[in-house]
Image 1 (cartoon, helix red, strand yellow):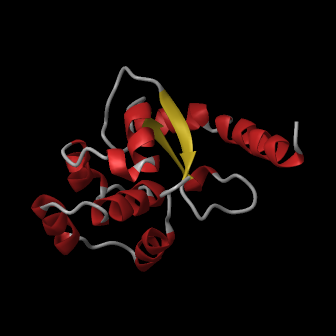
Image 2 (cartoon, rainbow, N blue to C red):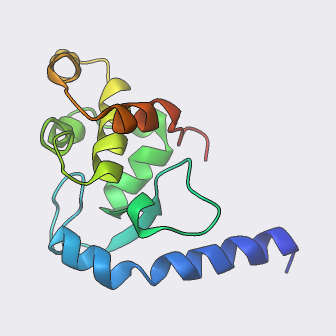
Length: 134
């Protein structure tokens, strides 16, 4: 196994340790679309610190993860949930939600962006996120 792959796998293993705490925080629901009864995964919100950090993680379903990483396959109707998650009190969820809603060329998304009010740190974080092409 290559060193890069080993480092990546080690990071994923460290992130998986946050699963129990993320399940508790999320109420075992996707932190973006609130889907329940589905498999959830730990996803780091970039730019992540050198060491894995719980505060940079979200717990999301496969549908959200797939669409997050594949912009051409995004179902804009699925993302209507962002009108709620942009108001999350968890900065990682809020920053990711803001970043995503800005990507959607729909009237409801534009309205959501226009109503947004978030902490300066969260807005700056949302400006630096990039999942496209990952």
